[in-house]
Image (cartoon, rainbow, N blue to C red; front, side, top):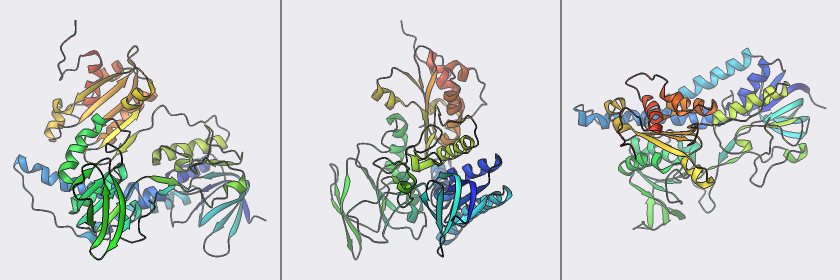
Length: 471
């Protein structure tokens, strides 16, 4: 028999789980939220988005002090107090997770600390290290997230770490190898490079940030080529051996002159996989695909009517803000609202320096799918604000439907791109046309003006870029 029964149980208290629990409580449901941590927050707050962005802020500040030298301002090289930096990062995490704990109590959500497993479609068991407790529910929302992928053949050694252990900031290795040129590898590689590590990146494909439009990646590639020790494309770490002086790695790639190299640490950042094992999916009649992602409909309902799933557990894109939106949709659907997860655009941001952000249809996707589009770009070298920041290497681009000039996608590379992309998301969601952005007055001088001028360029009328009329 279940110890108690609630209308909604939520398993996993990350950005998707706590958003779902809070929305369900706001709608009048009796809610239990279950997670192993002391407070809500999940991977994002404890071991992902927040601690990494705190460290990336430090990296950006260090970079700014070095970049300003040519303007006549020189700072001494920074002195890194690693213990204090680690404490500050943990303080940021503590403030946010503690605040979520307070919000949980204010909303009357019961928080149970432990790991949950479905026993059937209406009962789950929570293991908190003692005698397992059973809880009944009318509906359960699964929000267990994802974890880093581990590569076979790599030794079980504390010098081989993933994104979680890298954020613990145990030390600053002299020589760091990053396996994987995606956003996690480049963000963490940038952090360690700013703190003093010689960083080498290997990526199996022919470009960093696979899948992202090349014109957006190009300014970042140029900057990282100066900041990193080396970047090897079409290259893999074929073998890793433990030695007294570190980890000896054999690199297999076309431009690797010395294939056997020693590194103090190796960061494996080749993706994430859903936390769907040992969750009791089969017992509850919940279907998952061959990769372990739970299959859901547009309301986030699984093959079991009482079981719902959101976030990384349900597939790409694995983004915290996507999970939060899904969580609210699931809670509203359970409450009987006409809710569905059907976004026209989900923003993606790479928090390197420069940042890269995009939403909607990309130029790469349009080519792959055979969709005719018009692409306009506004170079930041023509932006007054960008030049005052010494960041004229950025670019803002629009992907539009040629006949109607409807905005289908937006891409930005440059500082603050992650903040600016919200305007692009709104434009895509509202089915705005280029003229809508063109005639929206943007403050001057700001980087957001580059969106307006990219819209002006659709008709060849950008104020600060001249293009000769054809014909």
